Length: 115
Image 1 (cartoon, rainbow, N blue to C red):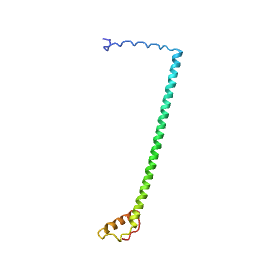
Image 2: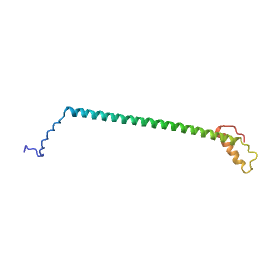
Image 3: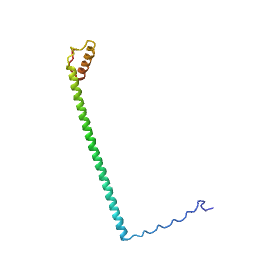
Image 4: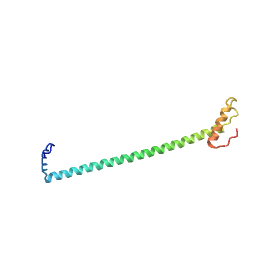
């Protein structure tokens, strides 16, 4: 009754002794150095790729900002031209639309408008 009902474990085998000599440890050290050099080269390439991507993104942001500024200036010039264009020769049925557009432009830029 004092016997344990669980099955007996088999004895583990002893690990084999590694047969190492001076040549194999030097070879292993050389392989490790080669692996380390490869990892460092890969890491350097990844860092270079990240820097290149950051530079491209920065250039893209600058270009977008420049394009927005150009478009803003273009719209301002177009609105100024429309606002200053005389409406005396406009057909009577188009006059309310022209004056409404000029009022919108004046409100957009805060210009005085008396029509």
